[in-house]
Amino acid sequence: MTGTSDEKPMKGLFIRTYGCQMNVYDSERIRDVLRPLGYAPVDAPESADLVVVNTCHIREKATEKVYSELGQLKRMKEASGGRMTIAVAGCVAQAEGEELIRRQPAVDLVLGPQAYHKLPEMIARASRAIGDRLETEFDTVEKFDALPKTRDADGPAAFVSVQEGCDKFCTFCVVPYTRGAEMSRRVDDIVLETRSLASQGVREITLLGQNVNAFHGPAPAIEGGEDWTLGQLCRHLAKIGGIERIRYTTSHPRDMNDDLIAAHGDTPALMPFLHLPVQSGSDRILKAMNRGHTAGQYRDIIARVRHARPGIAIASDFIVGFPGESDADFEATMQLVRDIGYAIAYSFKYSSRPGTPAAEMHGHVSEAVKDERLQTLQALLRLQQTEFNAAQIGKTLPVLVTGKGRNAGQMHGRSPYLQAVHFDGPESLNGQIVDVRIVGASLNSLTAELLQVREGAL
Ligand code: SAH
Ligand code: SF4
Ligand code: F3S
Image (cartoon, rainbow, N blue to C red; front, side, top):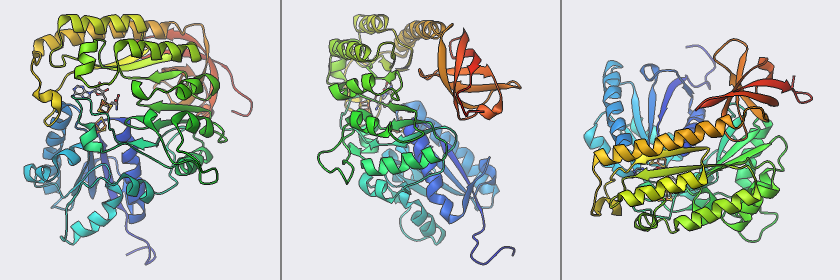
């Protein structure tokens, strides 16, 4: 044996992440929670002692992927002589629980999204083959409290979780069942985490929540008073030295309150980009989806946001082929898209999820019709995205440099509108915000020329 007696031997950790940004964030926190136990990330599952599969349950395909991945891991585990521990985390773990172990006995541990702070304890129990292999309790407060208050930054842009869970119960969606009730973090804890990231060079934070604009976290202890809103939180975080850009995702139209809209106008650090999912442009379908707003109300919100922050880029999510969706309903969605004009949008075929009210509804739409509608919608969205990108040509934009590009001498970064930007420049710019002139655009990225480097950047 080498090393001192209190040095723990390093153990390999491999985390595979599916799903939304919340899962990406959770995977980072799982890594943080395991570091004190001597777990260090490795590049491939074959060389890991512990493999965590952080799963997504949102559509049927996402769930199927988990089982095929677990089949591959089972073979690796056998090849390792059983040395590998397999943990399944995230939304499939929450939804399927015990069923996961039954369907794939190679799985050692199952933990829901509110339980990963218990992972060290579970690993200890598993190694002694005692106690429960399943943790699917909802205790978001306990989880937030148990997480390390500071963390390691990984580049100049970082996610910060501020809110979890969902009480909206859209009739198609599993999230309220997998993530539990809406719950907000304390402002003090969010500030501590953001400061720690800023001190490590983070310039841009994205505040995360399943319904991030429903945020209502306890106010800072020294101020007391009522819970804060997301608008208040953004203004406060903008004052932290080093934090130059703030984004938030994903928001819900029902929680787009006046104060948050005003913050888009009065807080320059709040980036001119809003992801506000609408799902459908038909009032009949919005009602059946239990979205709690009409297409007209959504249009009104977008108009007010655009008034507060002219030029703001709008993004959204759409579902085609929800049960009962007629040609006329689909046309209403197409018209909404034409009227709003999106910078980017994500669109999906409706996927029936067990246990959700929509799964029991009449009028399920055939796969062929869903396919056709998706293609029609995506063609329009691609056109709008290409046009939005092309409209940047000739403009000077501040770009947060996030790393080296594919070609020698090339760097990449992101525009205020969350577009990928490539330009020639020195590596020393990494992590800085630099001004570039946009000279080219395609569907997915912009090319640019470096204009000037802000003082002190080189
Ligand atoms: N909390 C976020 C979205 C979470 S899921 C919100 O409310 O906007 C991300 C996207 O997946 C949703 O916006 C929706 O467009 C899509 N989605 C959710 N459930 C789905 C289902 N059953 N079938 C197809 N798409 C779905
Ligand atoms: Fe799902 Fe609706 Fe909640 Fe978004 S708001 S997570 S779509 S239930
Ligand atoms: Fe998927 Fe869960 Fe996120 S179902 S989209 S990982 S909240």
